[in-house]
Image 1 (cartoon, helix red, strand yellow):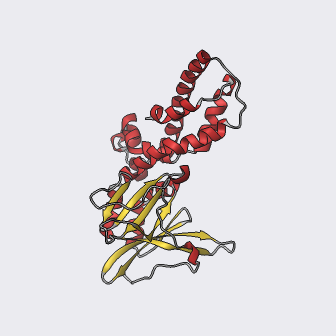
Image 2: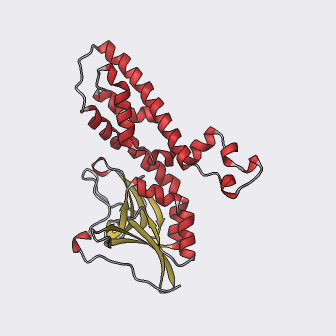
Image 3: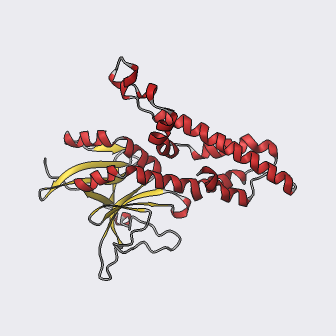
Amino acid sequence: MKRATPLVSSNPRAKRVCFDKDNGKVSSFKPDGVPENHFHLGGHNYAVVSDFACVARIHLCRYKLDATGSLPPTKDGITVTPSVWLALVREFAAIDQAFDDEKVFVIKDCLQLSRTVIENVAYIICQSYFQRKDFSRQFLTPVSMLKEKEWNALKDIQKQITSKTVSIMFGRVFLKFLRKEVAKHIPFPKSDSDCIDAEIVLTTSMVELLCNHIQENISSLFICYGCLEGYVKQLGHECMTYSNEQRISEYGDLAILNMDWDELVADFVNRNIQMHISPSPKYCNQIPRINS
């Protein structure tokens, strides 16, 4: 395979450390004390899930061992949104095929992946970009360079990364959308007993809406290889043989990442607006436990 050099941006302001500090927390760590939201890919490369400023993000970061024995982040790496991560997870097989054909692969018109050889070592290069007004691509300087072994490690632990992202999105991220939507409506005072009854109804309503949205997204993401291959026998069709438990186990987390959170919250508020009551802060804080 021909050697290639990663495309870089001429904009020096694009350079930055890929992992933002979350509420002042130190982003460096010891090799024997890896934070739970960090996933080791090999060497000093890690996948990191964060919720900086109530926004979930997935980072592919390279760290460097310093004189104190700690691993602070370098400027090498990329940051993607949950929707881009979802698209990446669903295209792993197609990406590897593109690499075999010596082609690049583009995710959601914002992330380019390619494979190159540098000093007889194969690397997977992930680089973010944005489209200019003239439709040309402006590539950002920070890139993620993973050895093939590290790339395979990323594929092996994709479900763990996805699950962590989902747990974050059902925490502060979801509450942010809920409070924003509730704030659009003027609450009416109710007695304590009315509030207790209302919160029971709201909890039931939330569970029902979550089930509906997750089911719809599982249906849109579900892949039946029997249908794709045109199998005659029904036993070869996942759409016929998969139980609800299997569908949720296989596609549940991906379905949650694929949900339209604004739509879910709007549905929740509009469905219960006739109660003329705004969910209390205590109830909002209980939602992550309800969803778990």
